[in-house]
Amino acid sequence: MIRKIISSLCLLFSLVSLAQEGTSSPYSFYGIGDVRFKGTIESRSMGGVQVEQDSIHINLDNPASFSNLKLTTFTVGGTYNLTSLKNDSGSEKAKRTTFDYLAVGLPMGKLGIGFGLIPYSSVGYKINSYSDAEGEISSRDYANGGVNKAFFAASYKFLPNLSVGANVDYNFGRVETTNLTFVNGVNTGSREINRADLSGVNFNFGAMYQAKLNKKLRLYSSLSYKLESKLASDNSRNLAVVTTTNGVDFSAVESADEEKFHDRLTLPSELKFGLGIGQSKKWLIGAQIVSASQGDLANTYNASSNVSYEKAMKYSVGGYFIPNYNSFTNYFKRIVYRAGLKYEETGLVVNSQSIKDKGVSLGFGLPITGSFSNVNLGFEFGKRGTTAAGLVQENYLKLSVGLSFNDRWFVKRKFD
Image: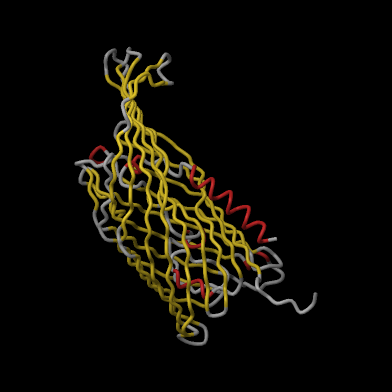
C-alpha cells in the first residue's frame, strides 16, 4: 500500500513543485529567490534543530541520518502561509499554499539510503506602482518560479553510535519576471520578460554521534558541510510594445528579437553544527548553529547597486517532550509536543540593511494507532525584514502538515 502512495505522491509533487508560487515576498526578486527551509515539519517545529539519530523520522538536514532508520520511511509535507507586508506607506496581505518536501528513506542494515525532491528557493511577488494623474508613469512587476533540489543520500553506521554520510543534489528550475511600464491615459506601453533556466550540482557531507551520559541521559551531536557550488543560468530577455483597452490585460503588438546570454551564480558553502541532550523517547533539548559563506547570487537581470550579499548565520534552540510514548490508555500521552526559537541573518543586504528573520514555532506529532506512522502539525510565527530605509517588513504565520509513513520492506517471507 505504501508503495502505491509513494508512487502517486512522487508524480503529483514533481508536477506541483515546478508550477507552484511558493512565496509572496518582494525580497524574492533578488538572487535566486527566497531560500526555503531544508527540513521536515518535525524539525521546523523545534526551530530547525535536527540533532537526534531518529529511527522512524527522516532528517533532511544531515545525510548521515539515513543509516539510523529501522523502517522504510516515506515523508511528505506542505505549508499554508499567511503574510502581512507593510512599509511606511501602507500594508498588504498575501497567502500561499506550498509543498515543502517529499522523501524516502531505506534502511539496509548498517547502510541507509535516501532520495527525494525539495523546493530549494521560490520567487513570487506582485508589485504595482500606480498614479491617478494623467501622463504619470506607472509600472507592474510580477514573477514566479524558483529552484528545486532532487537529492540522493547514502549513510553508513561505522560504530553503534557513529554514522557518516554524503548526498548529491541536482538543482534545477526556472525563474520568470515581467515588468509592464505605461503612461496613464495612453493605451500603449512596454513589456520586459526575463527568463532564467537554472541548473547545477552540489555535494553535502555529514556525521552524527551520540553518547550515553548515564543510564537515562544521552548526548546527541550533528555536523554537516555543504561545498560551495556553481549554478548555471541560461537567460533570455524579450522586449515588446504592448497595448491595452481596459488597463488590465495587455497584448503585444510589436516584439524585439529575444536576447540570450549565460551567467554563473555561486551557491555558498554551509557549515552546520548541533548539540542536544535528552532521554530517549521522552524528551530532548538542543541547539544548532548554521554558518554560510558569502554567495554570488546576482543574476544579469536582477543585479542592483543597492543590493549586496554577506555571510549568513542562523541560530536555533528547540526540543520535544513525550509524556508516555507507549501508553495504551491515554492517546494524549503519546503525542510528541515540540517547540523552538530561531534567529537568522539571511545574507541579503538591501539599502545597507541586513535582512533578518526571527521566529517561534510549536508542533505536535500525532501517532497513528497500530503503526509507527504519524501525522505532524506545525505552527510558526515570525518577522522578516524591516520598514527602515524604505524596505518592507513581513509578519508571517505558517501552518504546516507533514505525514510520515513507516513500513517494513525487503523482508523474506517464511510462508507463501
